Length: 94
Image (cartoon, rainbow, N blue to C red; front, side, top):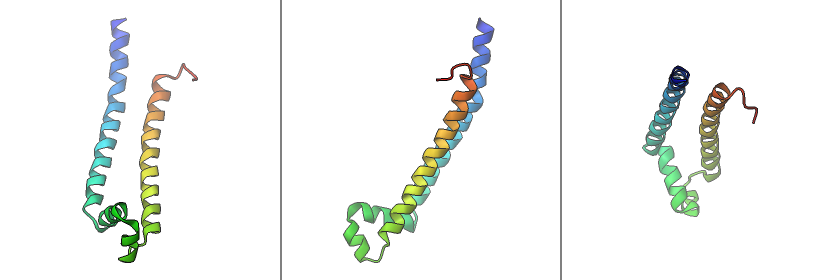
């Protein structure tokens, strides 16, 4: 029993490392975007969308790009979780 438990713990290490790398990459990307012109546009839209539009920011385009970026992050996270859950619980169909 102990050996089986240890093998199960060792199988989780690659999934943990992938998840940790993904979280670090997403956090880094978020911090980087916050320092760009795009991040400034996002903050200005958050504060006052009408004023941002008056200053020439295409609010619809920025909001669409933000939606796509957040959906991509959610999709990557779901893909990692799906690979993990299908691999560790292949005996459980639900």
